[in-house]
Amino acid sequence: MAAAFIRKTASRPVLLGVAACGLSATGYQGITRYNTAIEVRGRGIDSQFTIASVNEAKTTFPGSGFTKLILQDSHMVNHNVKYLRFRLPEGDQQSGIQTITSLLTTHTPDGAWIPVFRPYTPIDADEPGYLSFLVKQYPNGKGSSHMHSLKPGDELKVKPIHEFDYKPNEYSHLTILAGGAGITPFVQLIRRVLNDPSDNTNIHLVFSNNSEDDILLKSEFDKFAATKSDRFTATYVVSQPASSTDSRIQRGHVTRPIVEQALPAKGDWTKSKVLVCGPPPYIEAVAGQKGGFGWTQGSLGGILKAIGLEKNQVQKF
Image (cartoon, rainbow, N blue to C red; front, side, top):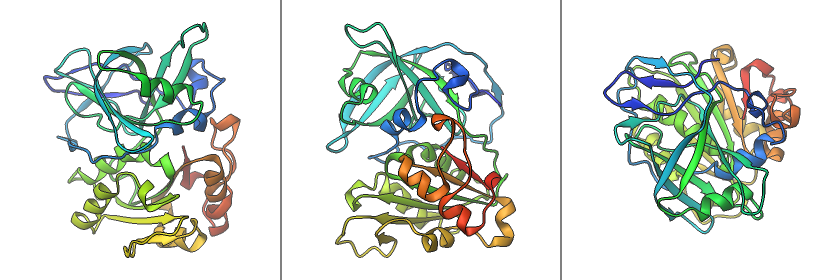
Protein backbone atom coordinates (compact mmCIF):
# COMPACT_ATOMS: atom_id res chain seq x y z
CA MET A 1 0.00 0.00 0.00
CA ALA A 2 1.07 3.54 -0.51
CA ALA A 3 2.41 5.60 2.33
CA ALA A 4 1.40 9.18 3.04
CA PHE A 5 1.75 11.70 0.23
CA ILE A 6 3.22 15.20 0.27
CA ARG A 7 2.68 18.27 -1.88
CA LYS A 8 5.39 19.58 -4.18
CA THR A 9 5.19 23.10 -2.79
CA ALA A 10 7.28 25.37 -0.65
CA SER A 11 5.65 23.79 2.35
CA ARG A 12 7.75 21.06 3.85
CA PRO A 13 6.14 17.76 4.74
CA VAL A 14 6.35 16.74 8.34
CA LEU A 15 4.48 13.51 9.00
CA LEU A 16 6.04 10.20 8.22
CA GLY A 17 3.54 8.04 6.40
CA VAL A 18 3.04 4.39 7.12
CA ALA A 19 0.88 1.95 5.20
CA ALA A 20 -1.04 -0.40 7.43
CA CYS A 21 -4.30 -2.30 7.38
CA GLY A 22 -4.28 -2.30 11.18
CA LEU A 23 -2.04 -1.70 14.14
CA SER A 24 -0.82 -5.28 13.98
CA ALA A 25 1.42 -4.07 11.18
CA THR A 26 3.02 -1.62 13.58
CA GLY A 27 3.27 -3.86 16.60
CA TYR A 28 0.17 -2.88 18.57
CA GLN A 29 -1.90 -6.02 18.24
CA GLY A 30 -3.60 -5.56 21.61
CA ILE A 31 -5.81 -2.68 20.49
CA THR A 32 -9.16 -3.27 18.85
CA ARG A 33 -10.06 -1.02 15.96
CA TYR A 34 -13.34 0.42 17.20
CA ASN A 35 -12.44 0.79 20.86
CA THR A 36 -9.64 3.13 19.89
CA ALA A 37 -10.66 4.98 16.76
CA ILE A 38 -14.26 5.58 17.72
CA GLU A 39 -13.19 8.00 20.42
CA VAL A 40 -12.74 10.75 17.84
CA ARG A 41 -15.02 9.80 15.02
CA GLY A 42 -17.06 12.97 15.01
CA ARG A 43 -17.03 16.63 14.03
CA GLY A 44 -18.92 19.40 15.77
CA ILE A 45 -17.78 22.52 13.91
CA ASP A 46 -17.50 23.37 10.27
CA SER A 47 -14.10 23.36 8.63
CA GLN A 48 -12.52 26.75 8.06
CA PHE A 49 -10.40 25.36 5.26
CA THR A 50 -11.06 23.72 1.93
CA ILE A 51 -8.85 21.32 0.04
CA ALA A 52 -6.50 23.48 -1.97
CA SER A 53 -4.86 22.52 -5.22
CA VAL A 54 -5.95 18.90 -5.01
CA ASN A 55 -4.54 18.21 -8.44
CA GLU A 56 -1.00 19.12 -7.44
CA ALA A 57 1.56 16.38 -7.94
CA LYS A 58 2.44 14.54 -4.75
CA THR A 59 5.30 12.28 -3.82
CA THR A 60 5.54 9.49 -1.28
CA PHE A 61 7.28 10.26 2.00
CA PRO A 62 7.96 6.93 3.75
CA GLY A 63 8.80 6.56 7.39
CA SER A 64 7.76 4.82 10.58
CA GLY A 65 8.62 7.09 13.51
CA PHE A 66 6.45 9.26 15.74
CA THR A 67 6.32 13.04 15.31
CA LYS A 68 5.70 15.48 18.15
CA LEU A 69 2.87 17.98 17.78
CA ILE A 70 2.19 20.88 20.16
CA LEU A 71 -1.35 21.80 21.20
CA GLN A 72 -2.06 25.33 19.99
CA ASP A 73 -5.61 25.76 21.26
CA SER A 74 -8.76 23.82 22.12
CA HIS A 75 -12.39 24.29 23.10
CA MET A 76 -15.46 22.23 23.87
CA VAL A 77 -17.89 21.79 20.97
CA ASN A 78 -20.63 20.21 23.06
CA HIS A 79 -20.93 18.35 26.35
CA ASN A 80 -18.41 15.63 25.44
CA VAL A 81 -16.67 16.61 22.20
CA LYS A 82 -13.56 18.76 22.20
CA TYR A 83 -11.85 20.49 19.28
CA LEU A 84 -8.03 20.39 19.45
CA ARG A 85 -5.70 22.21 17.07
CA PHE A 86 -2.08 21.07 17.07
CA ARG A 87 0.91 22.96 15.73
CA LEU A 88 3.29 21.15 13.38
CA PRO A 89 7.04 21.39 14.15
CA GLU A 90 7.48 24.20 11.61
CA GLY A 91 4.92 26.76 10.50
CA ASP A 92 5.34 26.22 6.76
CA GLN A 93 4.84 22.47 6.98
CA GLN A 94 1.76 20.59 5.84
CA SER A 95 0.69 17.19 7.09
CA GLY A 96 0.59 15.72 3.60
CA ILE A 97 -1.48 12.79 4.84
CA GLN A 98 -3.43 10.77 2.33
CA THR A 99 -7.19 10.15 2.39
CA ILE A 100 -8.30 8.23 4.54
CA THR A 101 -5.58 8.45 7.22
CA SER A 102 -5.72 8.20 11.00
CA LEU A 103 -2.94 9.22 13.36
CA LEU A 104 -1.78 6.77 15.99
CA THR A 105 -1.17 8.62 19.26
CA THR A 106 0.82 7.39 22.22
CA HIS A 107 1.20 8.49 25.82
CA THR A 108 2.19 6.84 29.10
CA PRO A 109 -0.19 7.58 32.00
CA ASP A 110 1.28 8.82 35.27
CA GLY A 111 2.48 5.93 37.38
CA ALA A 112 2.29 3.47 34.49
CA TRP A 113 5.02 1.90 32.42
CA ILE A 114 2.88 0.55 29.59
CA PRO A 115 2.06 3.20 26.97
CA VAL A 116 -1.45 3.75 25.65
CA PHE A 117 -1.92 3.80 21.86
CA ARG A 118 -5.01 5.28 20.21
CA PRO A 119 -5.68 6.25 16.57
CA TYR A 120 -7.58 9.46 15.83
CA THR A 121 -8.69 10.91 12.51
CA PRO A 122 -7.66 14.53 11.85
CA ILE A 123 -10.33 16.91 10.61
CA ASP A 124 -8.35 19.76 9.04
CA ALA A 125 -5.34 17.96 7.61
CA ASP A 126 -4.48 20.52 4.92
CA GLU A 127 -4.15 23.68 6.98
CA PRO A 128 -0.54 24.90 6.69
CA GLY A 129 1.24 24.50 9.98
CA TYR A 130 -1.56 22.73 11.85
CA LEU A 131 -3.60 19.56 12.33
CA SER A 132 -7.03 19.60 13.97
CA PHE A 133 -9.09 16.91 15.68
CA LEU A 134 -12.44 16.45 17.32
CA VAL A 135 -12.26 14.05 20.25
CA LYS A 136 -15.34 12.63 21.91
CA GLN A 137 -14.68 11.71 25.52
CA TYR A 138 -15.91 8.32 26.66
CA PRO A 139 -16.30 7.12 30.26
CA ASN A 140 -13.04 5.46 31.33
CA GLY A 141 -11.55 6.17 27.89
CA LYS A 142 -7.80 6.35 28.44
CA GLY A 143 -7.08 7.92 25.09
CA SER A 144 -9.95 10.40 24.97
CA SER A 145 -9.49 11.42 28.61
CA HIS A 146 -5.83 12.14 27.93
CA MET A 147 -6.67 14.19 24.85
CA HIS A 148 -9.26 16.19 26.79
CA SER A 149 -6.73 16.89 29.55
CA LEU A 150 -4.15 18.47 27.23
CA LYS A 151 -3.43 22.18 27.66
CA PRO A 152 -1.92 24.61 25.12
CA GLY A 153 1.79 23.91 24.91
CA ASP A 154 1.44 20.20 25.70
CA GLU A 155 2.82 17.72 23.19
CA LEU A 156 1.27 14.77 21.42
CA LYS A 157 3.19 12.04 19.61
CA VAL A 158 1.55 10.86 16.39
CA LYS A 159 2.19 8.45 13.54
CA PRO A 160 0.04 8.16 10.37
CA ILE A 161 -1.91 4.99 9.56
CA HIS A 162 -3.34 4.96 6.05
CA GLU A 163 -6.69 3.16 5.88
CA PHE A 164 -8.13 3.45 2.38
CA ASP A 165 -6.70 3.97 -1.09
CA TYR A 166 -8.86 6.54 -2.84
CA LYS A 167 -8.13 7.71 -6.37
CA PRO A 168 -10.25 10.44 -7.99
CA ASN A 169 -12.87 9.02 -10.36
CA GLU A 170 -12.00 5.43 -9.46
CA TYR A 171 -15.65 4.98 -8.46
CA SER A 172 -18.69 6.58 -10.02
CA HIS A 173 -20.56 6.42 -6.71
CA LEU A 174 -19.68 6.17 -3.02
CA THR A 175 -22.30 5.18 -0.46
CA ILE A 176 -21.17 6.19 3.02
CA LEU A 177 -22.93 4.56 5.97
CA ALA A 178 -21.84 6.16 9.25
CA GLY A 179 -23.11 5.53 12.75
CA GLY A 180 -22.55 8.18 15.42
CA ALA A 181 -18.91 9.15 15.76
CA GLY A 182 -18.14 6.86 12.81
CA ILE A 183 -18.46 9.89 10.55
CA THR A 184 -14.91 11.09 11.18
CA PRO A 185 -12.90 8.98 8.70
CA PHE A 186 -15.21 10.11 5.93
CA VAL A 187 -14.87 13.84 6.52
CA GLN A 188 -11.47 13.88 4.80
CA LEU A 189 -12.89 11.90 1.90
CA ILE A 190 -16.06 13.95 1.40
CA ARG A 191 -14.18 17.23 1.44
CA ARG A 192 -11.49 16.10 -0.95
CA VAL A 193 -13.93 14.60 -3.42
CA LEU A 194 -16.33 17.53 -3.47
CA ASN A 195 -13.64 20.21 -3.51
CA ASP A 196 -11.85 18.60 -6.46
CA PRO A 197 -13.38 20.01 -9.67
CA SER A 198 -11.86 17.16 -11.69
CA ASP A 199 -13.45 14.45 -9.52
CA ASN A 200 -16.93 13.45 -10.72
CA THR A 201 -17.63 10.88 -8.01
CA ASN A 202 -21.14 10.99 -6.54
CA ILE A 203 -21.62 10.53 -2.79
CA HIS A 204 -24.68 9.54 -0.79
CA LEU A 205 -24.18 9.82 2.96
CA VAL A 206 -26.46 8.00 5.41
CA PHE A 207 -25.61 9.32 8.88
CA SER A 208 -27.25 7.64 11.91
CA ASN A 209 -27.36 9.17 15.40
CA ASN A 210 -29.27 8.97 18.65
CA SER A 211 -30.78 12.44 18.29
CA GLU A 212 -30.78 15.38 15.93
CA ASP A 213 -28.45 17.27 18.28
CA ASP A 214 -25.88 14.50 17.84
CA ILE A 215 -25.58 15.02 14.08
CA LEU A 216 -22.06 16.42 13.98
CA LEU A 217 -21.04 18.51 11.00
CA LYS A 218 -24.64 18.75 9.78
CA SER A 219 -24.35 22.34 8.62
CA GLU A 220 -21.36 21.50 6.44
CA PHE A 221 -23.10 18.47 4.94
CA ASP A 222 -26.23 20.56 4.35
CA LYS A 223 -24.13 23.16 2.55
CA PHE A 224 -22.59 20.51 0.31
CA ALA A 225 -26.06 19.12 -0.40
CA ALA A 226 -27.24 22.60 -1.41
CA THR A 227 -24.24 23.72 -3.45
CA LYS A 228 -23.26 20.36 -4.95
CA SER A 229 -26.64 18.68 -5.20
CA ASP A 230 -25.66 16.91 -8.40
CA ARG A 231 -22.88 15.05 -6.56
CA PHE A 232 -23.80 14.88 -2.87
CA THR A 233 -26.87 13.68 -0.98
CA ALA A 234 -27.26 13.43 2.79
CA THR A 235 -29.80 11.32 4.65
CA TYR A 236 -29.98 11.53 8.45
CA VAL A 237 -31.41 8.82 10.68
CA VAL A 238 -32.17 9.47 14.36
CA SER A 239 -33.41 6.93 16.88
CA GLN A 240 -34.97 9.46 19.26
CA PRO A 241 -37.97 11.64 18.33
CA ALA A 242 -37.08 15.00 16.84
CA SER A 243 -39.07 18.16 16.25
CA SER A 244 -37.36 19.05 12.99
CA THR A 245 -39.38 19.17 9.79
CA ASP A 246 -36.29 18.45 7.69
CA SER A 247 -37.42 15.78 5.22
CA ARG A 248 -33.91 14.33 5.15
CA ILE A 249 -34.18 13.29 8.81
CA GLN A 250 -35.77 9.88 9.21
CA ARG A 251 -36.85 8.41 12.54
CA GLY A 252 -35.78 5.03 13.84
CA HIS A 253 -32.74 3.01 12.77
CA VAL A 254 -31.02 2.43 9.47
CA THR A 255 -33.06 -0.06 7.43
CA ARG A 256 -32.79 -1.92 4.17
CA PRO A 257 -35.03 0.56 2.29
CA ILE A 258 -32.91 3.48 3.51
CA VAL A 259 -29.71 1.78 2.37
CA GLU A 260 -31.21 0.76 -0.97
CA GLN A 261 -32.15 4.37 -1.66
CA ALA A 262 -28.54 5.38 -1.05
CA LEU A 263 -27.13 2.86 -3.53
CA PRO A 264 -26.83 3.47 -7.26
CA ALA A 265 -28.76 1.34 -9.74
CA LYS A 266 -27.73 -2.32 -9.47
CA GLY A 267 -26.13 -2.21 -12.90
CA ASP A 268 -23.67 0.38 -11.54
CA TRP A 269 -22.60 -1.55 -8.45
CA THR A 270 -19.37 -2.70 -10.08
CA LYS A 271 -18.32 0.95 -10.36
CA SER A 272 -19.30 1.89 -6.81
CA LYS A 273 -18.09 1.34 -3.25
CA VAL A 274 -19.90 1.21 0.08
CA LEU A 275 -17.98 2.52 3.10
CA VAL A 276 -19.14 1.67 6.63
CA CYS A 277 -18.02 2.90 10.05
CA GLY A 278 -19.64 3.04 13.48
CA PRO A 279 -19.95 1.09 16.73
CA PRO A 280 -19.71 -2.71 16.42
CA PRO A 281 -23.50 -3.30 16.62
CA TYR A 282 -24.01 -0.79 13.81
CA ILE A 283 -21.38 -2.36 11.57
CA GLU A 284 -22.75 -5.83 12.29
CA ALA A 285 -26.30 -4.80 11.39
CA VAL A 286 -25.26 -3.03 8.22
CA ALA A 287 -22.37 -5.13 6.89
CA GLY A 288 -21.58 -7.98 9.28
CA GLN A 289 -18.95 -8.20 11.98
CA LYS A 290 -15.35 -7.33 11.31
CA GLY A 291 -12.81 -10.08 11.88
CA GLY A 292 -9.47 -10.35 13.64
CA PHE A 293 -10.51 -8.33 16.69
CA GLY A 294 -11.61 -5.53 14.40
CA TRP A 295 -8.55 -5.46 12.17
CA THR A 296 -9.82 -7.48 9.21
CA GLN A 297 -12.89 -7.05 7.06
CA GLY A 298 -14.53 -10.31 8.08
CA SER A 299 -17.42 -11.78 6.11
CA LEU A 300 -20.03 -9.58 4.52
CA GLY A 301 -23.36 -9.74 6.33
CA GLY A 302 -26.25 -7.64 7.53
CA ILE A 303 -28.29 -5.37 5.30
CA LEU A 304 -25.69 -5.12 2.54
CA LYS A 305 -25.47 -8.89 2.10
CA ALA A 306 -29.26 -9.18 2.09
CA ILE A 307 -29.41 -6.59 -0.67
CA GLY A 308 -26.98 -8.63 -2.74
CA LEU A 309 -23.67 -6.78 -2.64
CA GLU A 310 -20.36 -8.63 -2.82
CA LYS A 311 -17.64 -8.43 -0.20
CA ASN A 312 -15.26 -6.56 -2.50
CA GLN A 313 -17.84 -3.80 -2.96
CA VAL A 314 -17.83 -2.94 0.75
CA GLN A 315 -15.14 -1.47 3.02
CA LYS A 316 -15.56 -1.51 6.80
CA PHE A 317 -13.60 0.85 9.05
